[in-house]
Image 1 (cartoon, helix red, strand yellow):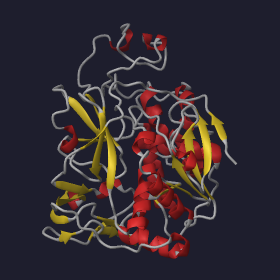
Image 2: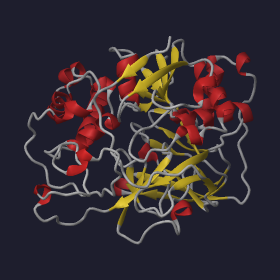
Image 3: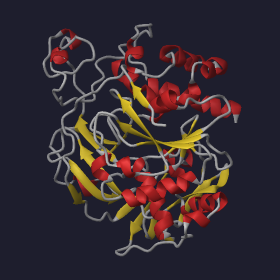
Length: 448
């Protein structure tokens, strides 16, 4: 039965530079990279060395603590570098792509004849399993567990987020195939959650429970949707997959190959012509940014401005991202700070005049407008967190490393993206996302 969820809490941040609905080819990147640091909770063990020849789908490394979970190359070519950081930590494996793509051949067949074990084996061997993540902890799903439900958020209302109605309009057959694959992994429901305010392309998808979500950001985040549709109890797990990753899963079983093609939105106030690009996971960002950026000092972000990873324009697209943001750096001193009446600044409160113009778009930068201060009860977090939790108390429990309180206050339902707006509105400048991740890491260490 379809659920309708109406949320009153949250905040939409309108930033200049949203992508127009125009799709172009990015041009082929010469170099692609897979970055183990993106996969939380794993210790990579290498399977290749420089000069190793690989195909799309060839394993590059596996998880030391769960060797069956493999991570594969998105393209065919030659491994040219295994880049390491401090204490020889593996940062990225760089592959120089062939002129013509070669693919590893994986099991292809009629889904109705495949057992759950066959599906899991193909997902693991192809390196597609890491697209499936779980709550609690927002880590790669446990292959030995059976989730009580699987969630797909069919929209994204984060700042400058891509429009999945546009991205997936020509890929619904593969999306449906991916949903059919996921149905093999759970005895529960597959929840496809859609923006209730807009028409969408997913109404023809079968085998899912469609839920209508009304509300401001973060209504599109998995944590918020789980909290209101099927909350997690102790000992349970819920899996979730991004919409474009559902398509990749569908292509794996319809074509028998790991086809890592992805449509990416290039957005932000420093982009001359924000639009969508055809590319491949791990591609160099300069294939889509060259000649399309202003000359100001900019911050490059793989992902959205709230949850994305800071990068450089000559580095690589992150594994889970469908979005690249470019905004001005905020490395400047502002005379009188927030005291001055300003017309080009956005504020959740009535500090600036933005509250009079709710639909105006702003060229926001990365200035934090002050340093860390005393962490007091201001009820700011409660205005932007639409989950049934106490966000301030949860953060303080994480700081105190009090595992019992963390569990009682909802650590199993949240991850960093559920606290992004806390970061944004916090006058104390507390790093809420970092604090939540440290709490989750502690839970994994103590309870696993």
